Amino acid sequence: MQHVKFVEMKDGDVEDYTFLREHELAYAAQTAGRLLHALEALEDSMGGYQVSRLTHSLQSATRAQRDGADIDWVVSALLHDIADPYAPYNHDEMAAAIVKPFVREQCTWCVATHGAFQKVYYADKIGENPNSRDRYAGHAYFDDCVEFCERWDQGSFDPDYDTLDLKFFAPMVEEVFARPAFAEHVIQPGVRLPLTST
Image (cartoon, one colour):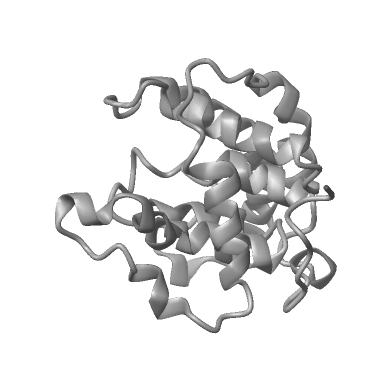
């Protein structure tokens, strides 16, 4: 069998969907590689900063790594802007959807909301609300996102920073995306772990 028999999903049978499931699992197993290629493509994304979006992502992850953050935080820092080219107005939500099946809920939430939290640094300079993060006040992970942005995101635009390269982080991405998707021991709903070990 080279392809399914149906042209409308409702007409598929067990053989068709068993066949497709095998293809889907094999394709899903290659997600880490596709994400690493997508990170490489950030080298040529939106300009204007002193570093590329790839370098910014690597710097964020490097800072997390040097702070002694666990692998969930490091990979989340690395991928937090992965969706910039595809979802410029909600890149944080799209990036969070990518990591959500494979990292702790705490990390996913910070990736999903970091766009609002970052506004504290610049929004007043362009006539927007710098306190847009206040809508999340009282959330269990609020302080974590404040720290995520302050420690790893907002200061990672430095062309002179000693940044680790993508090869350093590739095994971490591969490890995280090899986890069973949405497993409770991976997602750890409600668990709060420190961003740093220092």
